[in-house]
Length: 179
Image 1 (cartoon, rainbow, N blue to C red):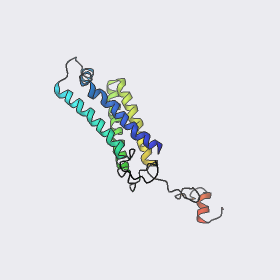
Image 2: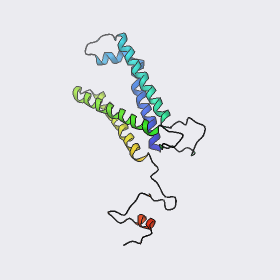
Image 3: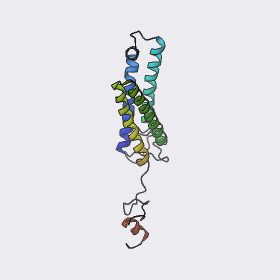
Image 4: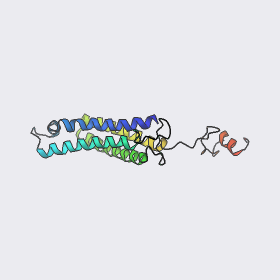
């Protein structure tokens, strides 16, 4: 589950990094994006700061809803995170993970299209960052969202079978001798 914590806190940090210049200096952002040098309008400053605060809010909600910070005093396992729906620590972990994965995928696609159209290096950095977090999120959705049904007796995965290759663990479980 270390990857899961890495993703949760990494996503929040990535969004905070993007939000900081939007909140702190919207005039500079408008001056950098505008083809002519001009002062930012009040509406542009408002939208820039609102976007920055929204990114911070989504980052904090991601950390809270994925169960990285326990919101209750009752812990099922000491220090173990889980994305199972029955886990009281994180009932919204998997849906939050899926939504933020879509966010990172859309953001990576958008920054890639802007990078190929304009050639600005900053867009390539956005593509790399969001693409990386999208890949980590997909990995967490596929592999970190279940316990894998590990047997307590043998330590083997219970979902193994002998098809199409011989599987000694599956044969032991079924009580068969190797052919």
